[in-house]
Length: 306
Image 1 (cartoon, rainbow, N blue to C red):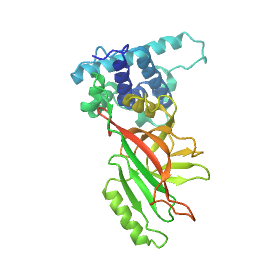
Image 2: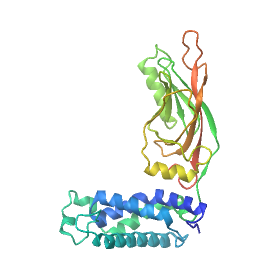
Image 3: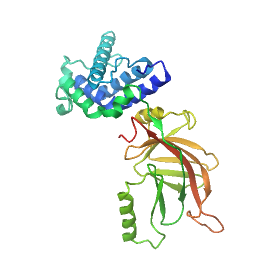
Image 4: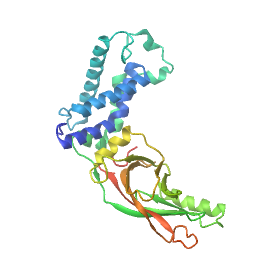
């Protein structure tokens, strides 16, 4: 079993929190009858788990783990309500009790209807599978191989776009004479291959990676050398992600970021700088250019999940 006081245990717990966050919040919505309060308490519950919890009781059999997790959530709710009773009225954050009349004045009853225990169990059955349970029993995700690529930019009416999963570059447009039919044919090829994730643009003194359904979380620490695959999943779950990665000066790379694609692939990338590339824009007396980057995808219990 993975224990929280070991490095493997902390990583396993981070993966478990990522995997079970939504079912726990859904359960809390039904119990608290307060969507905002449920999300806040969900954050608090998993913060407590990450801060010092264990998964000693997480058996390999799904039923035992469901019971353990549900019991942990109920115990946490009870403790929060006990703490709330010790506060003066209006002081601090108080979860709405089931017997409170305000608990029944909710804007959307359907959001909170049903049997909480049964709904929670059903959600876990749908989610659990091998991927989520592997995190609970200590099977941690890992990184795949490092993939290096150059993403050309700047050529008029030509967009080179990268697919992280395969490392393939796709081209949309063939210069200023590109017709609408040609562009649509290019997109048809791209869609048939599963879509693309990022393209590069030149800024006045910098550059930008623009996500095609892909979001980025710029990172300082942990970085390329010390981030784990579990770190990627954990930070992406709770961090503020954006659809582009802007680098204001080309002299500052490497820049590191976590990313998540529209297909659910997660990984870490590092922009290494700008290099000459004949596929990029050829200005007067200039060579074409491209963004050199490297990345690695998360594999294992959380790879390829949305």
